[in-house]
Amino acid sequence: MLFSPAFLNSFQRVSKNHGLALPLKFSSTLDELNFLSLLSLLNFASGYRVPLHVQTGRGAWDSIRALAFSLYITSSSEGDLLSAKGLKTLNAAQIAEFMGINLHIERPHENIPGVLVGELGGPLNDLVQLIVSVLNETGEILVNAGYANLGSFVLEALLQAGKVQAEAAVEVVLEKV
Image (cartoon, rainbow, N blue to C red; front, side, top):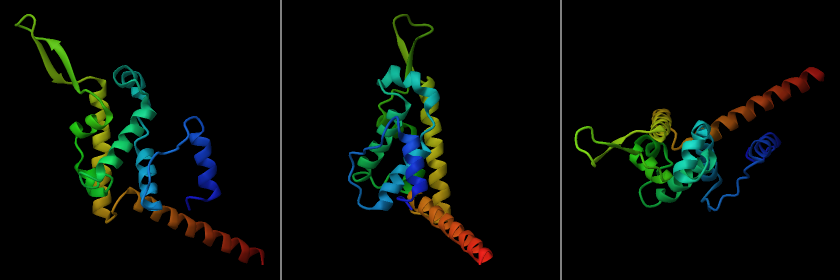
């Protein structure tokens, strides 16, 4: 399925500006599909491009890719963060750390001159909360449906789509005959 013309043609069209050479060695095609599926799931941060550039020097795509790399690399030492159970347990502090984002903003204390107060906030806090929400909800759905990870779900969907297309093709051939 990963080498089908439909997937390869759309992949080339969608990724032509970025490419997707990954400096990772996957243990299986399913692990690679899981990684690519997660990367696709999280590719929604374009509205945060400017604050990401200001804070990290990277745009949305590069920041999400860095997050996915961090999740993949860290999975070997902290449990499988890319598994359904791992996605379900991720929190804002982990996501902010993996993305290299500071979630605290400083403001002057109202009553004490010269003292700054740090608090959670800023536009990137919203982004991190969105990412955590998407990952936790995805993990919850996958766990409840009995999938080990997002890649397993995507693979099953691709296999089912392949069956539907094959059955439709058989019907066309039988009608013609």
